[in-house]
Structures are given as C-alpha cells and as structure tokens.
Image (cartoon, rainbow, N blue to C red; front, side):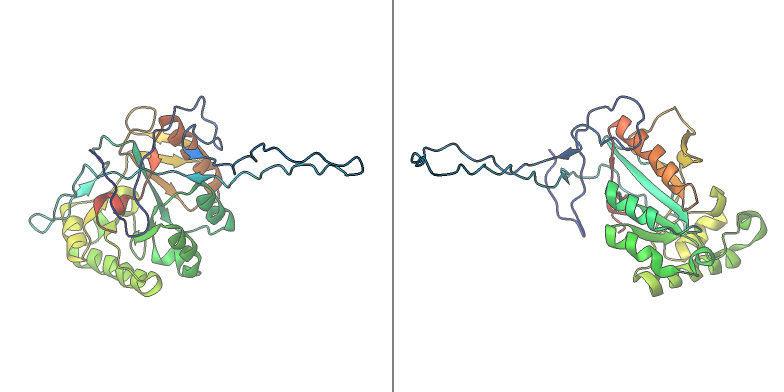
Amino acid sequence: MPFSIPSRRAALGIFGASMVAGLTACTAAEGAESSTPAPAPTDTATPAASPSATATPTPTPTPAATKRIRRSFIPDFQLPPVVGGLAPVITRIPTKHPVVFLTIDDGNIKTPESVRLMAEYDYPASLFLTKDTIADNPAFFNAFKAQGSLVENHTVTHNINMVRQWGFQQQLNDMVGMQEYALQHYGRRPTLFRPPGGAYSNVMRQAVADAGMKAIITWEAKANAGKMDYQVGNALRPGDIVLMHFRAEFAADLAAFRAAQLAAGLEVVLLEDFLGVA
C-alpha cells in the first residue's frame, strides 16, 4: 500500500486526474487541483433591529487560493547500476504510477515567460543544459531551480557528432567541463546525462560513468513546433520521458505538452526524485 514519505523538497505524488476532453492547452484536469473556499457565515438569531437601524450587508467570503494536491507514492522502478564501467541508458520508466517526466534541453532562448509558465503550471523539470548556450546568463536558470527543477549535463559544446568524431577522452573532457560548471553556478554536480542529438555508444556510456553520472537519459516523446511527437503510440503513457527545448516556441511546446499530460491524466514529477538521484 502507498504511504507518505518525506522528500528533499516536496513529496512526490500522483493524483487521480479525470480524462480531459480535447487537447486544450490551458485547461486544468478535473481533480488535479482543489479549491478550498472559506466557510460561509452560519445563520444565527440576532436581536430585532430598531426601526431607525440600517441593515449591514453580509460580506461575501473570498475563496482560498487553489493549490495542487499531491498524494505520496513509492517509486516502483529502481535505476540500474553502472555495470562493467558502463552507465545504463534510460528511454522511459516502466511504472504503474500515472506519472510523466518533463526534460528541457540546451538553454538557447531565455525568456521571463518560460519561468512564469513553469511556475504557473507547477512543473518540475530536468534541465539538460549546455555550457556554451547558457554562459551568457547562467543565473537565469536559478529561477527554475527555485521552483524545484534540477540542472543536468548536456555537455559543454553540444557536438551532435561527438559519438562518431571523438574518442573516450574528448567525450569525458566535455562532460567533466559541464559537471564543474554546473557545480560552480548551481551548487550541484549533475547525476544524469543527455547526449547531444540523442546518439550514444559504449564509449560514451563509459565516459558518463567515469564523469560521475548515473545514467544516460533519452526519450520517446517530445514537444516540438507546438505539437507532440511520439515514437510509440499517439498519446503520453505512464513513465514517458518528454523532451523539450528552450526555444522561441517554448510557450507553444509547453501548451502542447500540458494538453497531452492532462488528457492522459498524468502527474508531472521530477525524474531525479523518482530515480533517487536528486
């Protein structure tokens, strides 16, 4: 039976969201949020007013702010260990929990709107950042960190041909450079790695492990150009790892993801918390 467990920032959770009709990007799932209005005044007997008294209207109670309700759960998947010096590769999480994991890459476009939308939707995400794309303003991503997101490793240079062009040492150097940069600016060494372009090899798996990371993270679903793309099926499934990017179309991509997430009745939880590598 599930039971509540403490979390480093907030308890992980799921909620029994009802299916949402249509893919409407900004419609909250029925059951995902709950409003708790202030109690209405209770009718009580009052002394009769004198003829000269003026009736005072009863003020209308102000509803309390809505707040997401999350129920704690025990993750039902354990991250495989490094075996033979090779980090495991995770494409999606086999789980019975109705959860989905949002990951956002690179860091090219930095807008206040992206910060606002992530806070408005209460989405934690794994941010696979590249040093060369965030070096102009690394502090920008502290806002997402304050919301519960974590910075992970997407290399220093984002060489999408690194698997074919570089040997072990060059790959390792590029990873370690981002490890140290993330520690310097965000106070934590990344535990997860995303290959530029998604390609990986056993040489890369060895470099990831030697750089001190726990796994390579790929994907089977992505929000791109304002719509969802799926490698398997035509909807989000429990345990899907979703790819997004910090691009000009961030708002449209996030709206597409939100519509799919709500339609599937899934809760967005932090991948690192679920894997126990936060």
